[in-house]
Amino acid sequence: MGHQETVYDALTAAHGDEARWAFGTGFDDPLAGVDATVPDAVDPADLGAYCLMLGDDALVLGQRLTEWITRAPELEEEVALANIALDLLGQARLLLSRAGSAGVLGRSRERAGPGVPDEDALAYFRDPDEFRCSALVTAPDGDFAHVVVRLLVAATWRLALAARLRTSRDPVLAAVAAKAVPELTYHRDHAARWVLRLGDGTAESHRRARTAADAVWPLTADLFTATPVERRLADAGVGIDPAELRDEVRGVLTQVLTRATLAVPAWPADAPPRGRAGEHGPELTVLLDRLQDVARAHPGATW
Image (cartoon, rainbow, N blue to C red; front, top):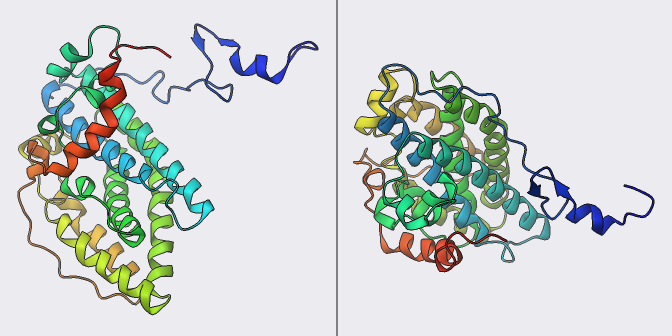
């Protein structure tokens, strides 16, 4: 900073060809230098659809967590939930960008118009039946216990998946997974600490944690059922068959709930992954109305 330059000048100074963000930093691209060529013998449409599934899960769960900012029980928890939501938004951005580069933009490109990045077109200009997220992330939250139990399940599942995707034949997926593993480890451990605190706390906190687990457990029914896309990509060494995650995920969740003095609810039978086919309840429409409102009201706007 020069002698005559103020901190406010630094915050608004040009950063290359782009404006700086509020705190004077631009984005570092975690995929810089990564080969984005679709691997041999892999259908780009399959790769794009797979990235949509994982990106939509992250986007919608992150949006759910932002609903608790200003509502969390502690100020420190406000910061923690915001940071976890930002991590998930970052994962969604990379995965949706990969989906766009694989050519699965569909009608979102026409709706968004020229100049809108692929990830923004997919996040803001798809209708609910075009989203491929799981039932686990679309369900609305009840109380704070529901928030942390759902986060524990989602983070445990995503961490088990990301750890395996680090060896994907798709260099982009492998790089995204490598970046996500430490983030998801924090998400899982943060949620687990809260589940332990609530389950082994007061009679009321225990009751709420037990009720939350009973509500969240049925939402795991489709987490371990592979779609045809997932099977093909698993065979090609690009994706993971979610059935491979079942024992690890259930083992971790059982351990956490047992230590929290909570009864482990009965595991639901595997169910068809309807969310991966775009079948969602009205709660996703409500969430997307809030998420997409400004972008749709002012398409292509710059700020």
